[in-house]
Amino acid sequence: MSNTVQSPVIELKDIHVHHKIRGGKLFSPRLVKAVNGVDFAVSRGETVGIVGESGCGKSTLASVLVGLQEPTSGTVLFQGEPVGRRNAAARKSFGRSVGVVFQDPATALNPRMSIMDTLTDPLRVHGIGTAASRRAKALALLSVVGLPPSAASALPSQVSGGQRQRVAIARSLALEPEVIVADEPTSALDVSVRAQVLNLLTDLKAQLNLGMVFISHDIQTVRYVSDRICVMNAGQIVEEGDAAQVFDTPSNDYTRTLLGAAPALLEH
Ligand SMILES: Nc1ncnc2c1ncn2[C@@H]1O[C@H](COP(=O)(O)OP(=O)(O)OP(=O)(O)O)[C@@H](O)[C@H]1O
Image (cartoon, rainbow, N blue to C red; front, side, top):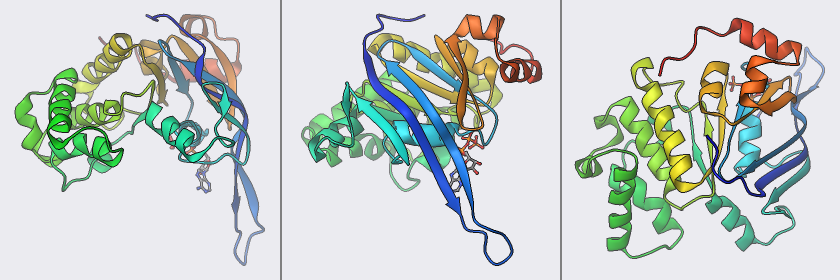
């Protein structure tokens, strides 16, 4: 399943994200350790799955990976360099090198922006190309995700849920990232289109030699797409390994519980 795996594009070292919760008048304040000492790396050409139950810290980890959240402590490395110590230009290039696909394209896409504008906007914001070349690139992106050129003039609400997620995936590719972070990308979709979107992500990863971080509460889905799996529980990675090995011979009790609770194998 994997292409040539290279040195990590993004590496996290001993990442902690803690939130202080005020208790108000009745309760004392408490600390939520959303992510509690995580090491993680993703390279081009591999899909790394992160799986765990709701509240285990997956989305918080995703927001650190894409630069939306500063960790309380720990180091984020981009191409081997600590992101925090680099200049604004380097942070921008980190931002450009990591594409994001969220769970629900209905909320992730601007409902008032045509699909053409949705796809040209990241290029415009980064000052890339002319209006004509941006439009050409948007049409190429539509083709890459299997949508016809006629979709360009539609609003997100005028296409189906699966097509909307294809648009969100196309947008994530607009800046030619090295890594895509997909946080529950199929959970909000009809069961009938989930496998198509998973296959699209897997195909794109192979064609473009992307690094892919695939986050889901559903271990069967993670198994289907991943080369490597990290199992998260209570803010920590409790098991990590080759997907088949984690799935077939889990070494951690929590992984076994997740597998025991999983429904029948995803059909594909
Ligand atoms: N901004 C915040 N302030 C306080 N607590 C937070 C904040 N963000 C997340 N948390 C808490 O941190 C923990 C991890 O949340 P996170 O959303 O990362 O988990 P998750 O595994 O992605 O779960 P889900 O799939 O339900 O989103 C949870 O207990 C959550 O309530």
